[in-house]
Length: 111
Image (cartoon, rainbow, N blue to C red; front, side, top):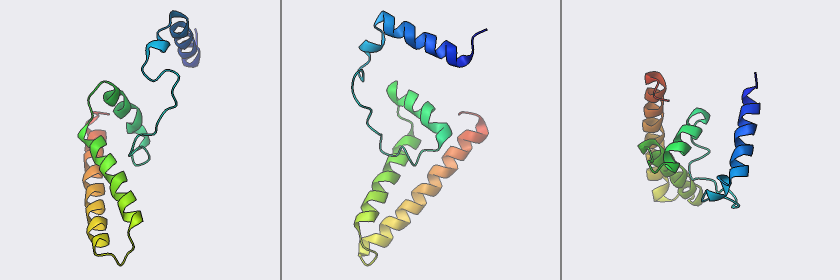
């Protein structure tokens, strides 16, 4: 009985032979890292990527992208800037809301 790795390798080989892989829009292009990738917990990365590729972006992914954008904005500001504390508070609130939603998904077995 072939292992899972062997089955995957065979499926990839079959896809290459049939030309199926060359039909993919990303064929031959380097993969761009999505905003929020590093903020996304490991166990949610693949399911969220599949949903995104299918044209459905979960609200949690949008929240993670917003977290990444806020972090960049915050890094560009100095702590003395009046916008710094506002963005820092917004970031903390968004992180908490996102964590609650992701934990609810874990507990419900949706992911």
